[in-house]
Figure (cartoon, rainbow, N blue to C red):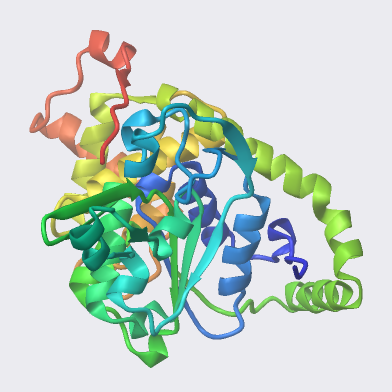
Length: 364
């Protein structure tokens, strides 16, 4: 197995790395679309993230990597078992080819065997292999729209259900979805674009010193991949442990009514269609707070989340066809809150409510 370039050795591209890490903390965010020119470490970052993620606890011999601690998500086969054993597996990394068909993605049921012998035979697809791992789609804009729809539906539901001729089979399909594309080769339809939770537009690094550092790191990796990775192993382990701790903390992160108002007002002020962006920002802000070892979200978390949720959703307004910066978004949040308080259009959250944080509830 080839040595994977360390995630922590990727120079620059902080926004892309943040989007990937937050999706690793909470895959329910809904994936990230990375748009950029060739040679900007898009595929390298996706592979490197999967390589550093913690081992996952699974049911032994399960073809779908079911989580023993979440029985309600088990596949049809695990639900029919008399007893289960537990083992640890590396986080899967699955690369979906552009030529993938629907059956290759969702899996197939052998209808003939079911009818003739009464046996339910299911051949797993890509969604089964990617469960509790990272599903990477290079040149996602060249993938058949129907297949992209299936992937995004499964990412949102966390479950793959295959039904043929009255016969049904289900298994969990919870994965970190990472799509990359070069905009010069065409874009995704707006309906599909909006369903990617986060989006990052990246360019080649312009700073000469950082470009030199990239060359030095790559030459060192090519000369001695194992030795180079060994040098970065302490940082890799530190980041892996931090992601694992954030996952544990996730369900304890809280938010207030005022936080929800800030998110809603921000989306409204930038003329963002629909409500998906609001939910994405909330989930991403919660994941960011957990990653920073905090149990309550702040305006900074909201601004950093919005910076990742808005680039592919804003159609008009002051940020149209511009880079949406964290500083601008934070200033806008503060302005909106001030305007609401002055105008009285939105009543401030009562002090007793602002003191008492609302517990986060899973938003599927």
